[in-house]
Image (cartoon, rainbow, N blue to C red; front, side, top):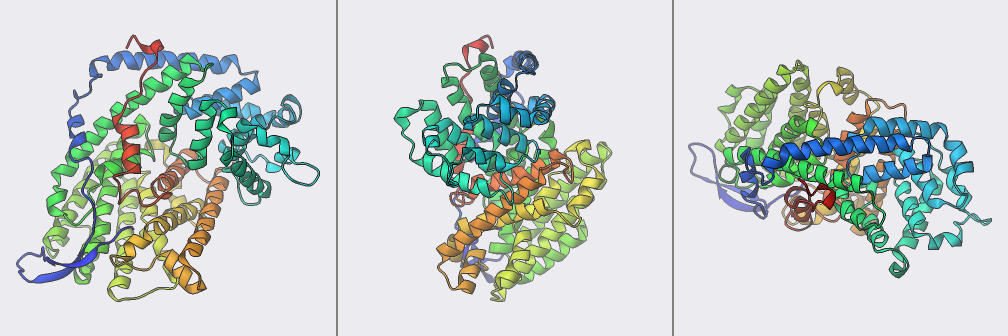
Length: 576
């Protein structure tokens, strides 16, 4: 799935043996967090614990005020669009999903009248904003609406260069493009070129910061919580910001942060309990980073159980990945793969000691999950999750066999397996287990069905971004050739050119994801959203190098922003 280690001799952990086995070890740095989050495992660890009830009460009051704001502008589409945009950017949209869906439905009915009458003909910001918000909501709005901003020669009008706000809205709208949206391809290049050369002296400080952020991280590909953490202080700087929206965003962010700290504290205690550093010293110690990754899939309190399940499963997969990629011999991997297929405690006996330790945790975790889902009358969910784990072991073994037998696959042979070894499909299926009644048997049937373009697209994003960011580091330590190297070899081009081609495939995959959200959807939107969020996590982790394996820089900053540093709260909430 990711980084491998260099081949060095190591004493075998097998029971009853004293000979030395040549093993590879990952050159992984230790955890940058240690036991930092362990303190939050205590229910009374929060500094704000005694104020919790008061904060929750105030949040409920502010939510009522926001709902009234929505009602008050229901007949004012321009104000409504701005309000919805602010609610989404501030990260509080999940409290108002029904209201937003209803209002955007009404706006969609009036779309033609708005863009051809109510909005000014040259109002690029509003045209781009309504396009983005409706596309996000699944309405298949035609991108031809942007033709009105072209001149007689078919080029975007020169006067738009000075419209920084409009260009920023156009830029963000372009990331909702689907296949066939040729004008948005042109628009993205135009908007990006203009924004990169913007004169910051001619725009507000807040807008300049938003432009800089967007060029680095478009909204569509960003994690909503991370983007809210960045945007809230910028919104606070706006001279005409709404105090109710701001205060709700601040309090809600901090309350969620405290809840996530407690959840991470419990996960850290579990991680320490299985003694990873001693039993699996060859593996990456990244439990905090894995929690961050899963909190990107679902951060809402209602999905806390689902998040805990998926975090433990992905932690097991991370260790298993390092067993197959780094530490296990081919002979050991054969019996481990067989044991996982049997899924029985008796299968543990023939395993080396370190594999026994991992296998026991596997059975314990899934038994715990089984009790959880059975108590809610959904035992069948776990059958799918177990089968996904068994399949993951099989594809890991297949790839490991390639390495141990010095087999170099063709790109055509590599990609179908590599899309599975990335682990995405297993995580996507497991992500549904703890989500409750929103996930039906129909949803699982769709996962295992035929035309699942969004799943394939997400696997492509996962695999190719991982390969692009980490293949050079991996090859130094011994690994099956990556997509970048195989493509470069087959076409006889430099690896940089191969990487460029792979990035184009990632762009096309994002178009497939966008198309999957257009109504009518194949399955419920909350399920598609988990797939979208898994892809967003990959974009954040791998768009600028492998920030999972090398977690001490950018990813550490992200963890600090979301899980360590609270937001200052405005005066409106000073009573808390």
